[in-house]
Length: 448
Image (cartoon, rainbow, N blue to C red; front, side, top):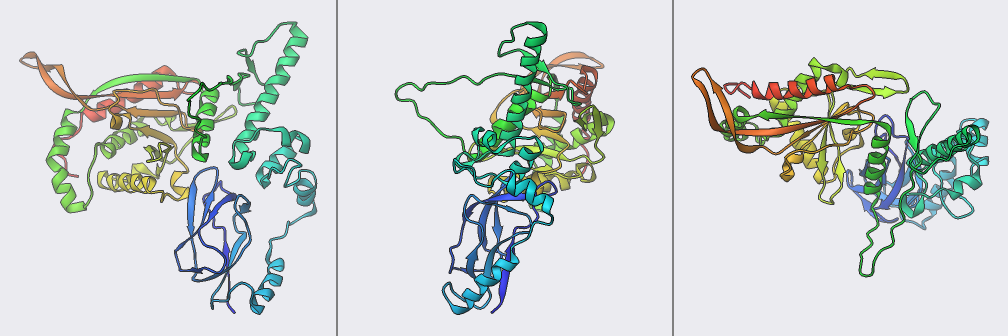
């Protein structure tokens, strides 16, 4: 009997584990190569995993809602169609015990297994990552079980734990300040922390909302919870400033109208305004590389690569940000194909975890919804994001050697939000102005 181990594959540099959210096959079912086998969720993305081999599913090692580490065996296939209950399968069950990965050292056993239990007294499951953080931060099992989880079935996630630790630090600082200064601190008081990041924590409690008769209560899905946590964290960490510039994109509109049919015939792709705008943004980043950075404590990490995140609305109403890796190495045709591919994969739930990792600067096209401008929230750990407004026909003053006159022009607003810890108004404003300059200086005679 050929025993085939199905392991949890690597899903990006920072992803070490995943939660099994749904098995698409039952024990005894036949599985084809590349046929979707299981749905998993990480703190980055939900994903379907295809089977790497063909056979009969004879064993599931991780049930729904359990957490598996990258590289662990999550299922067993039989290559010759062995079914559950056969003699050969009984032998397989005995051998599976030997195949379960062992913890490499006694210290790991003491740190994870004995100190923080996998299952709390209240029935909650705690992932290895959560237990490891709790151990390092001296959070007891009892304290951990009291934390309100935002994960499925109330599971405590990494973000829940980080938020809890932040609030605990803030509360501790409040008590110290009241004791030392004899002052009363309200819930909106901003408390400076003593860590190296220089961030500020605000002990703000969410209001308790009582629904009125007839109101509909809709539970957030997992992705919406992650988005909400990420947005709150970003505003909490970075002091946001937004600069606005209006750009005349008449040359670009006319050029695209002229070449879009020929482009479609040659490349079998529709050319939209998005890759043209991204091309200008990449040029401006090269001119002002200090917007392509991240903040770590009191250090600034200047990114070598220019990886452009493209905020994409999903049919569910949620949002995801696939990343164009090394965008500065792509010409306009390459940008067009990459943008279209990522957008289509996002809408069809076919993005891979690595497709949404490594972004260094993000673009969001609010104009696709008819919005003129917006004040986007920075996609941490980046320090800036650019919102592209709708392109509109507007009357404008046109300067010529013969004098000024009024004409119809295509214009759009660019809204640049940036982290004021490291990007001041001069840099933030000069950058978005440079993007507008590249758009207005577009060569309308160029080839694509």
